[in-house]
Every structure is written in structure tokens, then in C-alpha cells.
Image (cartoon, rainbow over all chains, first blue to last red; front, side):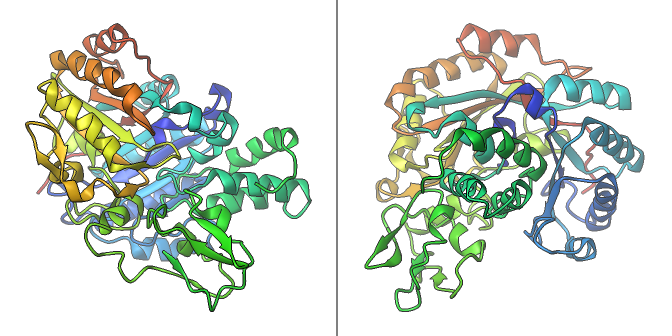
Length: 215
Length: 241
């Protein structure tokens, strides 16, 4: 399960963060889905994602992989995960997906109000919602909320809080800049929905609050 | 995961990548604490080691250790579900599968997320509480279902209880009028869980991305609230097989 609905952050920050999934359904529309998914990936690329991955390749946009390689890797049952950092791009993407009408499930993870408005503007009628009722249990053991804004951007929990602290330390000691630091943080995310643009903004905001001590 | 001591140069670059802090220095080399390691493979996948000293343990696919791999490595295809990751397709393809149909609601309890990970005993605390409340509708396609030894008690297979994983998801599907009972049960077990868990509720929408009133009222009545962001199936899928 991509954990995108539990991304933490302020509404202002989440407004620049929408995960999009292209998801064929096993046993329902797997057969013959590869050319349709490939077409949707072409549209996705043209719309300008902040990050993306195809499950058949598992290499994100910043790993040096070329778009042609991603497209060539799309096989039957391949799912594609991506993230966008602007409402306008999501709206354009949804309009183009609707027009393409490939019959593959499309999921958008983001602020409910904004997605509702986009769906209305594009003329889509969303089918199912997955609501987050938050985190429960031993919350006192969690890293602080500002660190969690980074770690919850990785859909499978592969981004360690210690790596965030390590990047902040590197940033404060001038070993990396905020963009290079964001790409370090994006690397462990095997589901391709880590948003390095949002991460860069978070680094700029939070790095001054931390010391340069080793984690 | 293992780090070959004879190859490791002790640079420590791999250590911050471990989501569970299982890698530490010993005799100026990095070593993996095998009790803590989830076998998520992150340290190897990021290719940070300058001397290629990090490798998959030769015993990683032995039972029950393999449970760690299947539940923690997002690139491993689960032996039960055939899906990469630890859950099912749940709401993501619901416009095609109608797995959660009109009048129904799905509940997902992901134990160990965010960040902390967990021992499978934490899962058992919840499956037991659900069983005691007469809630037995655990999703059969979810790997947790196959780990339950006795559905009547909610007990997991005994040989799995000492395993640790990054997270595991209990997925339940019930009629909407049973949502209240499920949330009550979850609420009753919150203080017993050593780790953390995230809680999701998914349901079909009414026109205009309207969340059904019955679902909203039940969530509020049980003292829960929902976050402003959610995962929304845009209704563009269809079946052709």
C-alpha cells in the first residue's frame, strides 16, 4: 500500500503535493493493458511530474533513467506511481486522462477539497475515497513532526529519519545544497512519490532549526 | 541484510539509510543487528556502499525470517498476494473490482507506520481484540489473513510472533452499520499496542466527491477525525477481462 494519504504537513505545503497512481486491476483489466498504460505514461511525462516510477523498473526520475527506458519497461500489470507539485498540472493531467479514456484506474492522493474542485472542473465523478483517520498508539516514540513531513513522503517508509537529519547536517556544513539534499532523500523511495520540490522547500524551512551534530 | 566485514571500510555511509537503525559500528566496521533488521533491503538498494560490502543474507527466504522480507521490502513480491508490498490493491482499483461495494466500508490498520516498525505480537493484539468483538471479516487476499492460526481467537501462528517487520496491514471489510463496532474495538486496543498504527477508512463516494453521511457520522461519533488529504479513485477504470 502506498501510504500517500498519511503524508504529513501544513495545508499550504500539501497544496503543492499530489500523488497520482496508474493502477491496472489484477483479474479485471490486466490482459492487454500494457499499451494503454504506456500511453498514460506518455501523457504523464508530458504534463511534468515532480517524480515518478514504473514498478517494472523501480528507478525514479532522478536515477539517470531515460523516459524511453521507462516506457520500454511497461509490461502487462505494470503500475506507475508519480507525484506532482502543482494543482494546475494535476488538472491538465486529469483532463488528458479523461480524454484518453483507457479504462485503467487512476488514483489521486491529495487535499480532498482541491481534488473535488479539480474533478468538478474536469468533469470527473470520483468513485472511492480512502480517508486517513490519523496515527494512533505510542506516538511519543515517533520522530518530531517536522522530520515526519519528509519521511511520510516515501510511500513505503524507506526514508529513515536519520537520513533526514544527516542531510540537514550536510546542508549546514555546506556539503550539499537544498536540491542535492532533496535528491539524496528521494533516492530510497522505491515507489517514486517522494516530492523533491516540496522537500527542498522543507529543507529551507527546517534546516535553520537544527544543529550540525551527527544524528 | 549482512555486511561483509572483510570488505567493509568502516565509512558508515550506509548507517543513516537504515529505517530501523540496525546498522552500527563494531571494531570500526559497520555491522547489521540481525534481531532488529527488517530485511527491507534499503541499504543495498541505494547503492551507497563504496566497496559493495552489503548483501542479502543467504537465509533471508527461510521461513519464518522471510516474513520480514515480504512485509518490509517494497520491491519484494509477496508470496501470498502476488503483489509488491504488504497490502492489497484495496481502494486503488475499486472502480473496476467493486471489492468495497455500495453500503460497505473498508478499514485498514497499518501497524508499525509511520517509521517505528513492529513485532508481530502487536498485530496479534489487534486481531485478538477484533475476534473477541466478533469481527472476523479480515480481507482474505491480505497476507495477514494467512498468518492467523485460529480465526475464533485471532491468534497468529506461534512461530511468527517473534518476527519484526516494517509494517503490516490488517484489512477489514464490513457493512457500513458495522463500522462503529470496528472503530470501538480499535479504540479499545490503542493503549496496548507498543508501536504506532495508521487507520484508514475507505468507501464508495456519492456524486460530486461527497463522502456518505453515514460514514462521516460514524467516524465522528466514535471520536475519530479525518485528515484533509485522502486517496481518491477518480472513477476512470473499467473491466474487460
